[in-house]
Image 1 (spheres, rainbow, N blue to C red):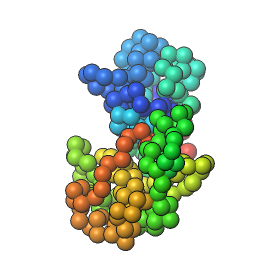
Image 2 (cartoon, one colour; image 1 turned 120 degrees about the vertical axis):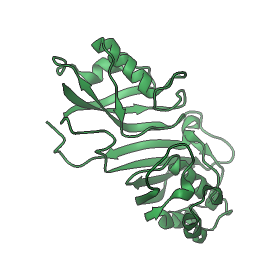
Image 3 (cartoon, one colour; image 1 turned 60 degrees about the vertical axis):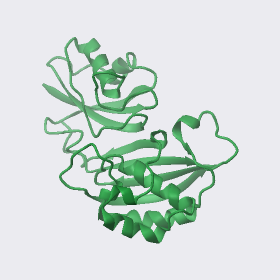
Length: 252
């Protein structure tokens, strides 16, 4: 057997998330269907993490094991000829057999996009932004400083996925104004709890609207109570930007 890592990009609006389900279209289901067409046998793919329904990805990483004699396939070309147009393979590589897309990851970076123009949303951006209207970027930047570091983020975890610990380390949290009315929240951490980024985006929305003071965030974190924090932001503004791995030893 040989193990390969694939890099995927997708828009999640038409899918029930990453994970294969008995009913409903998923990213994993579409990818495994395409692999079955090529290999004529079932193949299970393992992702760096499960994105929720409606969430997008620029660089999701997955791995799968190949039967003998299939190493020379051009997986970018082969899979993209079969995948729907809102999913594509952007690259692939052979990896060692101890590489695991999720367990080998050291950190992940997500973005969340707000649209701050109150009069309109550009049609080509509507599927990828939360149209919030005006927000106070300076207050949101001050809030980001209070998110960074190693904390127990139980106040920002929705129920549904049991975990051994709710402690995570946030390495990067910042607000960027990239073009016109689009504001981007970028966050990189050692790992994320269920809907943690969307809950933080909801917090930043509350801060940007003047409903929550940045100085109040340490108290929200210390309470370890999801009910203490503001609403969960819509899925469509969230995108998995990149997954970080240790350098080169995973390559064959």
